[in-house]
Image 1 (cartoon, rainbow, N blue to C red):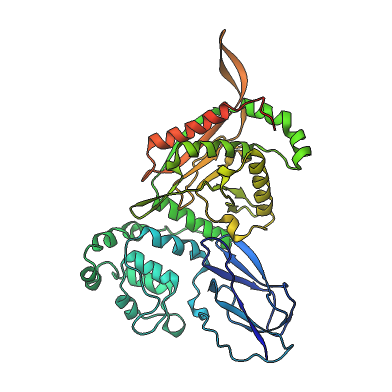
Image 2 (image 1 turned 120 degrees about the vertical axis):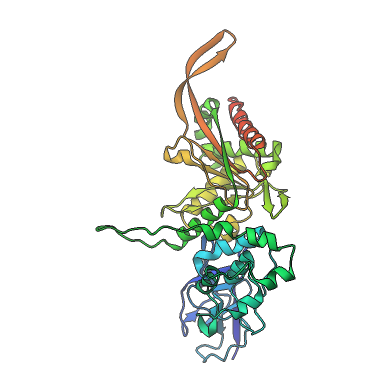
Length: 444
């Protein structure tokens, strides 16, 4: 009997795993070539994976909510019709390795910012430790010997998140003599790292008569974890600048119909703002970096993330890759394409990877300004406020006068570990200058 192994394909830059969210076929079902077989999720994007073979599904190696590594076999298809499935010989990881979906973001960002030693995937007793458990152990300074000693409550005595957190609450972790003795230089960092985490206590929330309890969906859990992690990781500072965008408003009103007829695209304000931001990043590349431990990673490319609200109320950040290589028309097409596909849940995993700087348009909702949270592992984010008609002083050769101008606030939040007030403030001021110097006679 011929059998085809269906593996989890590479799903984008830096994506190493995905969560099974729904099987579209059951064992015994006939599957056509390229027919959707299973739905998977990576952080924020849901994808349908097509079958790579035609036949009968004879084995599913993972269940819903299991976490699968790229390259692992997830299913077996028999090409000999409805023949019974042979015992699988794949060395794919068992379902017991799955970790909670809502922890995906935390486990992927914990490692780069921690200096503790790596924790092996299995101990001396041969017991497997999930990526989440290893990430917590690394952060809290728990040795493999201590992990081996924990009584697990999961299947086959597997240590779960609950088990390791209970171990930490009972005094396990950084005080272990073996950890201090083996790596004396790392001990101070290991003791300091968990201090903030272990001292934070979430208060009990009362529920009153008539209240409704609604569980967060998967995406909202990921967003919540990512936002809390970002605030704990980066000391946030926000600088504000007001920009006169009258020339931009007048130019767009003048050319928007012509542009749509010529390019088949709507010209919004967003790509115009993106163009100015790219120019400012070139002037101040210090905001286009990331922090890894005590190292600063200077990004070669300018990949602009654009925060996009979804119909569900959740948020996603598709990325315009190498935005500095695009002219205004190219930026417009990229912005429109990513925004449309985001709202219709058609983004690929690679569409949300690799961002180096993020822009969020709070003005879409009528907000004058905002204090955005940094999208880790970036170090800065710019919020665009609503464009408003206001009376303003206009300087002319004949003297100052009062006129109606279109103005907006720019709010720049940045990581004070590596971006000081001078750089953060000068950058947002430079963006405003590029907007105000926009040529009203610019040709398409």
